[in-house]
Length: 254
Ligand SMILES: C[S@@+](CC[C@H](N)C(=O)[O-])C[C@H]1O[C@@H](n2cnc3c(N)ncnc32)[C@H](O)[C@@H]1O
Image 1 (cartoon, rainbow, N blue to C red):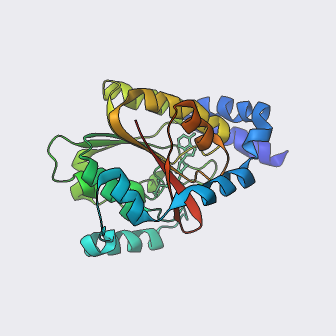
Image 2 (image 1 turned 120 degrees about the vertical axis):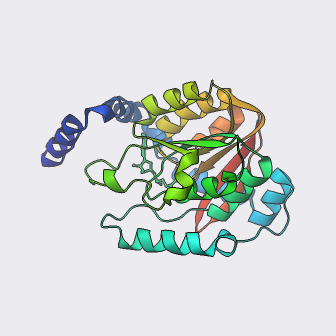
């Protein structure tokens, strides 16, 4: 009861995030699929390959250099900023993998959902920093009741921000807005925000529709439930899946 009151008062203080309440309520009608993590993990295990093979297949890159070796100062600085951050958020994901996918697919118009410290944003911005026509729109709503608003994207250095726009909205509002800004035509999408079955099944088709032919759709933590598998089946695609620190990342080409 007290927990519900605290959640309600957080939404009242942060009314821009209220549309997310309706998404959360919708999860109740999907409870079996929301709890399909065990099947999803088994599917990921059966279908995954190592990062090198995945990058070879997707963007014809062999022997990808670690991002920390390519940009040691930027990564060290980001790790220090994250360590000193007073609010603890999610750790760094498959940043080397994301960097090489973006860099070698020559993606220009990029959308990302879910920022937290900004590890995937940093990987994408490093990949596009010298590409004049490229930009990244990231969308994020902070963790409910965690008071982390001021620290979202805190590891992004000032010199990379000229290519970046950070929208602070729930996906239901932020994804359509970002797509509109990019004329409903994108080259690359990294999905790492609402991991629920309901959230993914709402957002994935919308992002897919705007993705250009040959564009890449990357989704993190696809082991959480069967949404990514069901989405791939709905668009008749076989994904490339990699394992990273016990979790799985999936990529599909349009
Ligand atoms: C796993 S973290 C993102 C990590 C980030 N991609 C990285 O590599 O550092 C997920 C982020 O998505 C945000 N998020 C969760 N649900 C969301 C929603 N419905 N709309 C927008 N952001 C959401 C969380 O608050 C959090 O900041």
